[in-house]
Image (cartoon, rainbow, N blue to C red; front, side, top):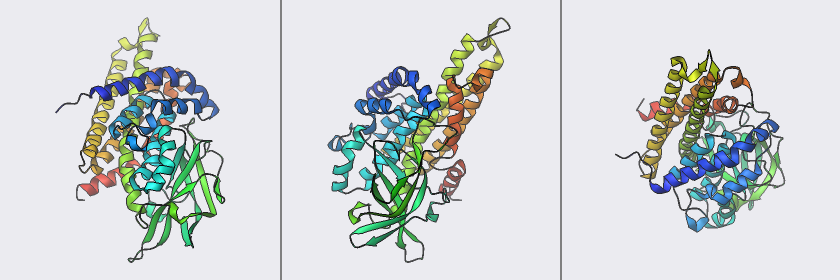
Length: 382
């Protein structure tokens, strides 16, 4: 068993690490405080090929794998989570459903722009009254001739309202199954479609440089050919997408946790107290040692889940474990990093303040910690 990265993966990690430090770190704090979307960073990530990492070259991708995406997310999140979640959502939730379930025509129309970073896509699953209970979806789509007529709303949708957002894939009730349950399907809604309204961006606690909106559909009409995948398979499709996405979120969480270690090490060597660097005190040393321990074990968890996924093995439980553990570690490390920084940790000019604000959503988005425990327990046969 070899835990070392391949030469290709190591080169990618180093490249993204340098980009994060040199291109993201100097400008992201201003975007964060102004709540503005970092278009220039997204353009640079597009030129680097990050949006196309896990996709075949025939569709405009880089011919890499999902693990490569995870490595990129970890390195970006070591510096900033808003940029990392923009990439994660664009790939895992935006482009991946079209790649996994789209027709040849849909792939040809949408993937080249999405994989180059020229355009972004959102994934409309969560609703104002429906989060973990995705089966409670209220948005409806009725087939009227050769068009779907969509009515309903979605909440907390990432990358849904930028100037370069091209589409949102929407889960909707399209009928009733033989057993009386809701028939869920997924439909592509291009930006600018009449009846599709993007609300102003949320005022968020964290991820302030990422794009998040509530969406409303009022007799929104799209061609019948915009159905993504098989009718009635929407529930199964988004479960597959979320299983994969949890590995990516785990990688992002590990990046935040490691970034907390990085910043704490730097501060502990510079900050003086009682005549010497605070890093000389065992109380600080033990905190940072524990933070490194947690980041390391969380990294192993997502590496394991990604390896199983790429090998074609069952990975649902391992993805849930990775997401649960990594998100918990991110919150723990952000809290400890803030404590190590003392009063400066409460100042937005220090990255750890941003990390602290960004960490909590990792225990909520793409499946809460409680949902992850449910998945693990069920997979164990309980």
